[in-house]
Length: 255
Image (tube, rainbow, N blue to C red; front, top):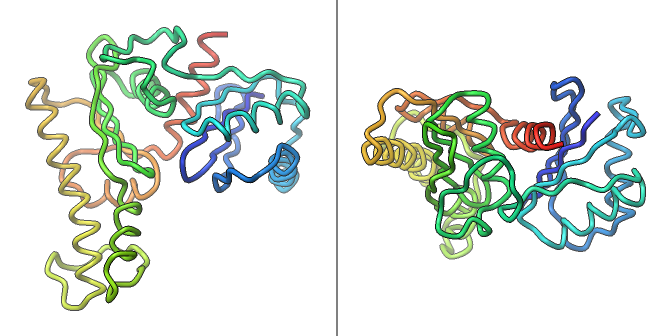
């Protein structure tokens, strides 16, 4: 089995792959104070709960945007699994051209996303990833990453709004019946969710127009991706495990 670890600013997502199939995925909060032993206990308990034998893991791949967490999980794998993880980053020859000004600055999650979309959905393509930030990643017909855009994440922006506006309070995200809210709650739901969907529609249209592309795959992943994909007007495929799949296929193709 292969263990893929996607370390983001908000969550750490772990996926177990067997025979090219994702058989388990687990999610932990990103916690800079967690020790190597605490990481192992959490992973071991999750594996025990799903009757998975961690001793069957024969390879580990890590993609991370949080260096301190990278160190902890790499040490955990070295100590408890006796495996040295394969780390994905923009400074490694990954078989995919990062056709941007500073390839070393491209996050591992974005590399994994574009690799997965090109392999599983086709080229050219656009990936929208809803996380702490909302990223738009673009590959051309050759599968090269040619850049994209980064915007504040939906939940990140909402939390900041609630912190700064004394009369507004956190809400659960539910799709409102109308764009015109009738109370504070539905005003917030409309502005946050419909606003995000319209941003996606606008950015996808802008990218397609710049590149003179018509019918190309657009894949959404992460966080509120399924919700936003359901109310956006452009034709979108939702794949919640896209980043894990990209990490796995990079590991498999490069080892």
